[in-house]
Length: 616
Image (cartoon, rainbow, N blue to C red; front, side):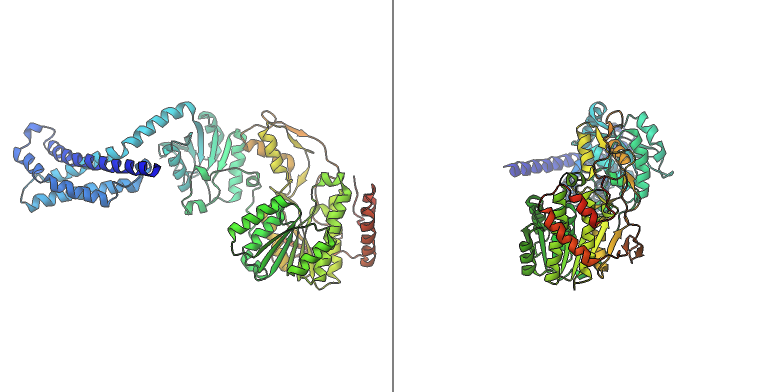
């Protein structure tokens, strides 16, 4: 029914334009003569009036055909632009040419300027009909804007800025008004874009925000480098305005630039560096045709490993995780994106020796990415026995299964918290690294570990917590004003993990270059500013004190470890630390036997194995 109504409305609209154009052709013919004789209708010779109307029916029919060819009856005039305007120019000019051809054909002389005036008048009439509704709507929108709309400052007067300003002006669904534009190009400053003045460069933003009472800043610089975006955002964030920016240049190429493609400015935009780029197509050639098993495949890191591996044609991808909800999500996602993928999803605990052994026996993986672990520091401080059972014993059982069933390569995800640990989670991950190095020396499997810091947006990271606290009106809680951390996005970290896996020869602890450390307090302050609030006024920052096991800063290397370079400057190799492997394996047996008794002093037992572990 709805489609039928829309079709009838479209038919009536076309019929209206055809009838209007018939009248326009007749009116343009008469008005052209009036203009030729300087506006004096009585001065027009009678024979000229008769000739202009004698064969007007032929001109009308041919003009309607021409207009149809130029799509003047099929365009969406609510969104008409330069192309539609040029079509009207061409159609009017051709109609004037037909008028002249008809007169010459029937040997009827008319003033030469008549045809020029006719084409001009017809153009004006047609433009008036096509753009009348749009003009009325624009006037009404401006009147509404002055009262209720959000005032927007646009950064960038290029292609993206042009399209966004036009959409904001034309759309009846966007309650925004662009009041000024800034661009660093001196040639553009002082000019107008869709009626909005380009009032200065980035340094003028604070002044213009006050002058025009700006509520929101849109950064329309999709291809600008990260360093330049950071500089602009550093200026914008002090204004207290809400900020949005265009995600990437591909949106321009695909014609997807619109209000809906704008995204909230994220804290990683303020890290001020380009995203880490890895040539995974060449690095992951060893994945193609292989059976890959990912433990903890439903987690933040594990699920991203699954996504990137799935893109490179593995023979089979086996996902193992104990938590069914996120595992179900990644299963559905991979089935939809990669319907040809041979995917197996299993709910299982890495602590279950028999279950791990059966899985490895049945699927015979060539490559294992071991991401399953308890990672939340404060929770593990309250449940240290669980940290040992899951991280240490779980890793040991997966490693033993990999060794037994001759997996070619085993990559374990480690953490910077394993270096000189002050918490039980970090200490257990250090034991896992020791397990990897020990078994590499006595197995055909190549065992390696990859160590990196915090991941933006991962489960349990500070950014989602800060966003939730800001949405609730604060306060934003930071443990200490001087606490710093290394940050990397999930996709960056996983890309480097996969590349490190390709470099592996066995026994290495790969260390990822995480860039410059960032103060958590600065992250909180920036996120508050980017949300359009003022720290300390609208949203408070509360310092709660270091949590049990938490350090002010994390280290990527222990003193005994040196660094070796790889082909990728962001991936380094920590030299293995010599240890008594037989004694270590005996300590592991004692730890496994002791932890199941649920002792209260498990930290002492762990400290005997990890000499660098100093619990707070």
